[in-house]
Image (cartoon, rainbow over all chains, first blue to last red):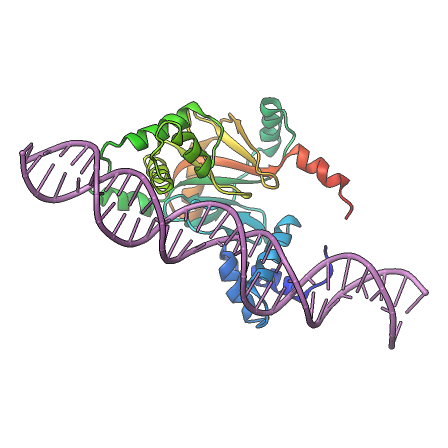
Length: 133
Length: 133
DNA sequence: CTTTAAATTAGGAATAATTCCTAATTTCAA
DNA sequence: TTGAAATTAGGAATTATTCCTAATTTAAAG
């Protein structure tokens, strides 16, 4: 693993240019503009490699396919479980304390990579109110 | 939506009896023991309804299919992004403060349903050390 | 420069996970 | 009762992702 490849480079470039939480398929179509020969399997494979290398972050969605994010700057995500909207935000979680609690409660010294909020956004809440039940 | 159905009842019972974060397919096989006629599509459909009703919680996985949890008692989850292990733990996140930050930063008054930690567990960290790179 | 082994690729096939479709059945309120 | 709405089983269809293979590219060593 880890020979140079302009395809992988192009994918990372796309991620840096488009901070829009794209799906794998959206990344594929964006990369096509730079690398018209690239295949979908190459995109999927390299996305996984970039995630494994920590260059990009996989966002685990409740709705629709997973999405990816280039962390130009440390931030957290709040995701609407009903419509899938993703919000970037900053919050100073006390990771040391959380790590300590994890170690005490589950006996496992995890490295915390990210903390994600799942909930229901304002729009989905009000749409629901209009629904007859 | 929401006529009585013994199939949905059986699924919820299974979730209450097996607090093991099962996948939809695992739920299907567990429910089969109570309802030998039940079909997989019924299981999928009712799982989604139970999630929507807030009776069970969907866990968004990095690895493998999504999993589900009956929250017999409020708790959070820490998930290993590499092997998919799920740990239940308790932590008193300051949801009010987080909500306030969300409103200020993203202008959206979300209802927070859950907070999930993603990271790399101890086992996966040490496995990695042994890997030649 | 060559050579060579390892890594990567394109393209399509295969798999996995989930949703959709339909006719039959069940639920429940009038 | 009865009729409309909801739900079901079963299988087809769709979606998302991974796997397979022969050809190409990379990089390091001579």
